Length: 551
Image (cartoon, rainbow, N blue to C red; front, side, top):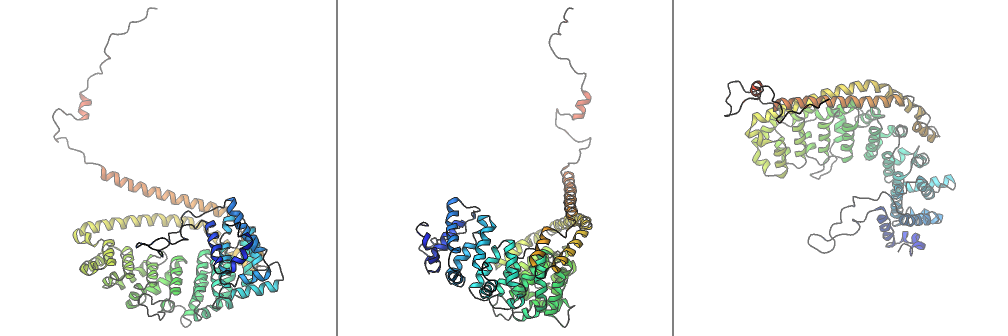
């Protein structure tokens, strides 16, 4: 079938029905075979749900498969300039090109991707015309999807070139555009090193308030994700968020949370908070530095009970509550303050399908005293909770039945678990402190390298990226590797010590008490020690003695 279509690939790209044939062929070559055709539903007939995706996705190409894809790619690169220009904006041709770009990892050769991307963006012709065409792709509703795919699959050198020629110096205006802001989000998601993150942050930091006012929170979320991923500019990011959201009081954590998580005006009963605002809060709580995460957690804990209850029962806000209670950077005081705010409201949380998850997290995070009154509160309303599925799950997770029948054992088990967790925390905190002293010099050197790479940006951005990637500024690579290895060994030794402690506890429990001398024994049986004491001299082996040989 593919041989018969060799001369018609480009024509099929633009056809309403033929484009689906080409996309199906490309999908089959990638290994997606089980979810192309709908299966029969439970009641029979057509239109049933599609099969599950094939878990064994193809990681290589056979010779014939590679030949088919190469034929399609060659036909694409040899097409005329008018055809290439039109396919990016076409309703049917654009998705076909995007499916072809997904095949690049299967070739395992960057040069194939570089050639096709250079042809699609007209990099072989005049630079001004190519840049104008790229800007038209960015601002087009359909062309922006093609740019997103290019940024996702481009090799490192090609990615840097796309950023330099198409995005640098224009990020703020593109981020506010209704179509171009999506490629900007994809760009921030696929940044390759710290230097690129710093350059993008420096370009967008003065436009945070405009992005919030223009409802471009997706761009801000991707920027915070990039800062968290590469552990750079996190403090600056929090400062700019405070300026944009609470310019009157930049030191108030409560005002920051109110502006970021404030109700979005949606009337849906299950979604009352902005999704992107909650995503930014989760990134800060889960991935930012401990001090910055602690400030966000304090802002949440200082809210009124009604606000927290509404947040916990929201489809997206419940994830924020979970992140605040599970955040390693949040202080114990903030977590306890949140749990205390829900006192008397755990039944309301338990009957809600989103609030029940928050109630489970509160119980898992609470100390023994708070767990006790949480269990008692759930026990008092067990009948109401048992009427809903989420309430039944909450009763099971909090072990309310065990608390009602055997309260003493319930308390002893929780006390023992808490002691073990504290022991683990003590051991691992000590090892982290020792490892942290050795890696401190490396982090300072990295910050200096980042500053140098950022200052070298200028017009020649690729040189700055290349110098940072090759480690031209880094002088302590060997020391960092040694410190990381020693840190791992310290953790392993701590884990072995803990394992020995628990093993000794188990052996002591298994030991039986020794019987006293006056204890009764079965008839005809003697203690082992008595048998040994009454044993006579050892008997010689029976039989005739061997005769001595005559010499």
